[in-house]
Amino acid sequence: KWGRRHPFMYAAAIPIAATYFLLWSPPQGWQDFHLFLYLLVLSIVVRMMISIYEIPSTALAPELTDDYDERSSLQAYRSYFGWTGGNAMSVFNFIVLFPLFATAAIPNGQFNPEAYRTYGMIASGLLLVSVLASSIGTHSRIMHLKPAPLLGVCHGGLVLQQGLQPGLHHAELRGDQGQLATGRLHPRGGIRTHRSGEQPLHAGAIQPSPERRQQIRGRL
Image (cartoon, rainbow, N blue to C red; front, side, top):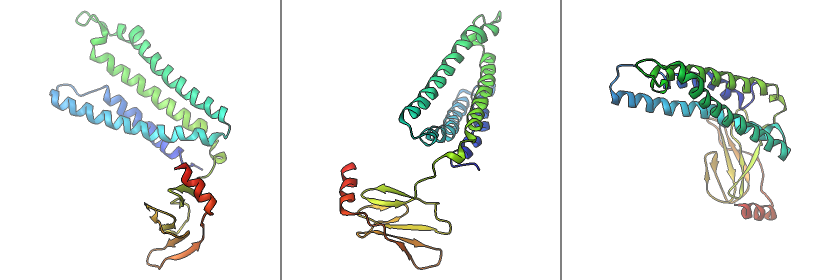
């Protein structure tokens, strides 16, 4: 219903708009150091909120299509509209917004703090609309997206993705080398699954062939 990406995209919409507006509307009368901390914290939070949306949104492109050209086109459109929108907003500020806030005391509206408060309001609204439009516009594609792969390749072994086996609390993989967050790697192949309070249960062998191991090692 919601997919793997869209919950993050929807959840980030309002926080992105709210924190971006607050970033351009600092409290008045604060000391410089307090304003510095305010802007520092909000700058970090804004970046975090944008990342919560941007990372899953970017990850949608490879799942929407298998065609290389279509994937390239999707990324090209993303970059084009992103940069064009940002540049258009800058032009709007200098041609329209700043002149509106020119006063006798502040002839250049660029130096009027109220102009930036208004900019923050407009930009936050546009961010909210664009995030929701992107999320809602791709929502109908959720049922057609590829599911997460059950098995992956890591350091010459096979990795069982977490969260794909209901009731399994840990997955231990036997492979060739190293340690994984999902379990320990052992010299022989096979998966061991652990339930809470139970002894390990052997779930099946996934030993790759020697030829396949050589191919995997060659890629690392």
